[in-house]
Picture (cartoon, one colour):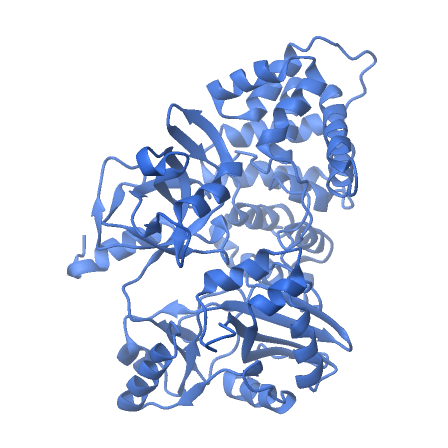
Length: 574
């Protein structure tokens, strides 16, 4: 398939806001792609080269693009930066300068999807001394061979910012329409087919692989997709409960567990091979060598997949540390042994979904807990079962709740002992979380202003964004409260500035636009309607609680949730 065909689709999608139209356009593309090429096309339509769980990335930032475009066009980096300041989009800059480039390529061969994909994969996998310069050269070579529109989308793909409004749900529905709609039905009438694609994706988070299964084996093949030890899956998530009383009343047979202030850890074991993943599907096996020792010593099963919450604790006091300290270990790829000593960990186990060749999703939680207890020989204080209490008595539950809070944890998770495990879902009837605060929001920073006075050199007045159905981010307020002037416990202006600088896409005076990457948990007093923001809502007295290192922008709260909370507050119904 010529790359120009894919570019035509990109152009149509960029100029189409209607969701159903986008699905039709993508479904048509998927049908046209050869079976072997299909997984690559599915990834590229998402602006990806690798599945969401893969550690691999191209490793090229916006800051490198002027040099690459200069190599490809003959124009100076200064000229390219000037163009970028006007558009805020290196894709548009590439389109412009490739159309005006000083050196014209003779006997130019058409780019194919395969060529572009393989070239970018090769770029991503370059390592060692001089690898960055080699990466620049490979991308520049692609651009030299490209037409202006092709250059636009090559650059956007490299930077991970395709700007065509294709969320994961759109890709899912396009797979349904392309391969599972034999009778020409409307999407709303294909519920079983949609659930089959979604189920397969929960267990194998790669729509490229899922599309190929759908094409070759249909709904039957999708329903047969199984967990694979060593590969991540989308875990079950908890819903928020208004309070402890309501959570207890929701289930006939509840069990209460500490809600630890840590990170979900998913442990895969196959003999002496181990893999550790976060709920965001990040492979963190190398970052936690001591966890390998714990698992090999404490887990008495040949093959299993178990889940728990990992917390960091202060080695001097023995008390739990806030999640942001543990996140330093999750992100760290160097000086691992040093971090092992500085931030010891504790894992509190609460779930098993796979044991010696058998999936356990259909087993009730009570049986899964019994199986988990049988295969775990706890290492006290390091690798143990989560603290739990089986009760329906509100007074006993309240005592347990207070105990969890005094222990420095976030609250409780109330679970239904009769419930099955539903991967990838927040399921009413499954898990309910109870916390002693109002419902905070997880929002993405999409803009800011450069500070003045004592904040000079730091970003401040951060613009918050929530997601819409298409995966776009809508402004819903500004925030500066809850951020520390100096680096100490909590989030500092320096820390946020250092994190956000690589994602600045445009500067107009002291105002900057920021690529949606960093998620922050935000507390507030009230949600108000506001014509000043794209979302139509504003947060009253918002304050930063913490950076959500465990969440990506695709997991940020939606405009629908803000609307629901707005209606709920003070008994509002309109």
